[in-house]
Picture 1 (cartoon, rainbow, N blue to C red):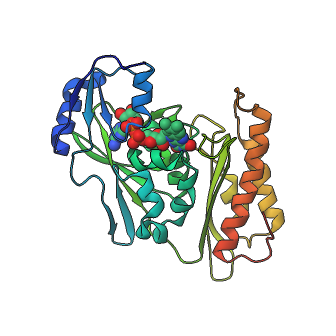
Picture 2: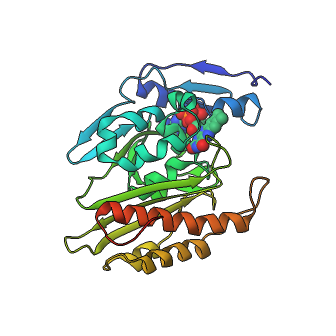
Picture 3: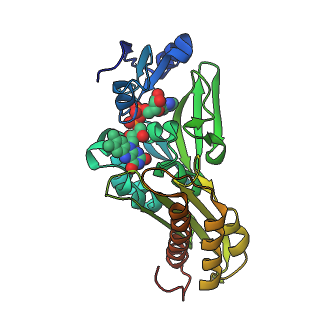
Length: 295
Ligand code: FAD
């Protein structure tokens, strides 16, 4: 199929893009990597009258430190998230996750901002950015605001972005000493959207007690699902196999997945428990916890 007719604009500045998006309102869509939007247009699931291409705007694809934080432009390609040395040292969780996202050809074009704005519940990046405690800079002709990642994702393909607003930058908080991370997922074939996935981040103190623990699941709800019990069970404690098992069980009972042609709700719930236990074990071990065994 071919898309419905549309007008195409390729502005050279962010201000021009914001002005176009404001002028055309709901009729306009931003074009980033095109890896979700273009297939949707070809299937006529989306038919924007106006496309505003972000690819010629300078300054939207930077990777730079801001104090101890790291800032990533919305147009940073997914392949860059996988290979950039600064990202690998600041947020190794991202580098570990990216090979699970689609195929390398898609990651060469697909962008960080496009994946977050698209907010597919089976996408890896929304869950990982929530687990990392990121915040998002959003801009429109009316000004700019910072939105914490958990408040950005509102549900199935829904975000806090308002009409005419663009996601322009993502800020990753400083990486702490004695921190650990892990991502894992189950997909039917490599490169397919996952049936379920899990991202974990933990920080231990000098004595090996957990200072903070975050666990976020994907593919088992309408967006990234944070399992708050990971924090309440682990924080203040030295991680043990029993505690990590309890986190897995909290994830299993805490999600409400749907059935579809790929997997039943019961199977996805089972995966949530297994993946939660697996990533939490790996994250705690990487942070320096001993005696947790394999995954
Ligand atoms: P686009 O397709 O250009 O845009 C997507 C949406 O976001 C559009 O509505 C657009 O208007 C909006 N948008 C884009 N940028 C911005 C911005 N800066 N501000 C506001 N709105 C914006 N993804 C996964 O996560 N996991 C997978 O396993 C996976 N598998 C895939 C397999 C295939 C075969 C294909 C074709 C895609 C797959 N994807 C997967 C999707 C891929 O990761 C896309 O790159 C991503 O979802 C969208 O990014 P994009 O830059 O291509 O955005």
